[in-house]
Length: 222
Ligand code: E4P
Image (tube, rainbow, N blue to C red; front, side, top):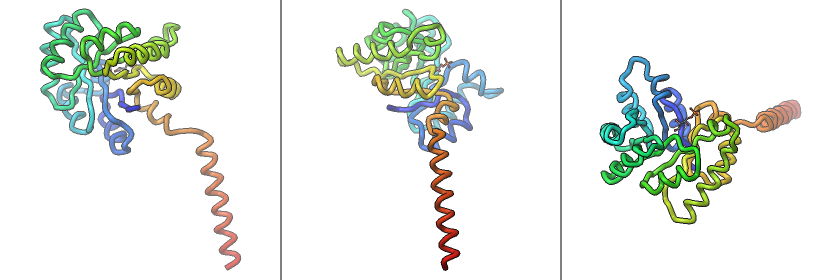
């Protein structure tokens, strides 16, 4: 499973890249609004693309097919590793087909059902992003979407990657991985939590403690 970091925070991206923990980035208008400050969002995206050796999703804000296509082409020109994020709309699927025909990679975002994911795959998207946390928030079992979509894509041989998004905690990552999602995109806090387990800390304390006792004994015996 690939891990993407779901942020436009450059410091976090530098950390995760240097730690070798991530394979790409997803951004959205909200994360860019949060972290770009006074900097032109396109410059932030260019900087992110230069930091990461992997795909960087950048989202259009137009909602009509022609506008999404034009904006998508502009975004794609920012860097070779840009993936254009298009919302799951009827007009969006027209834009997806046009961008894909131009050789541009697309991530269909704001997907909440397996049939929406199927439509994105039929349109030729490289990724489709079901939003897990937002589904769970409204009382659905988000993993149903991953399970159904995996089965559908495997039944028909679609190569569109299932990009589990809106991840809120490590269990989302584990469950999506067990069900065969190709990618999990997560905020920095969740990525950091994946590394942690209290028994790891306790076990290490014990090992180091026992080792220092042994070292002290050896000194006494010397
Ligand atoms: C994915 O590409 C989205 O940017 C993101 O995962 C949305 O997550 P949220 O529901 O936490 O805003």
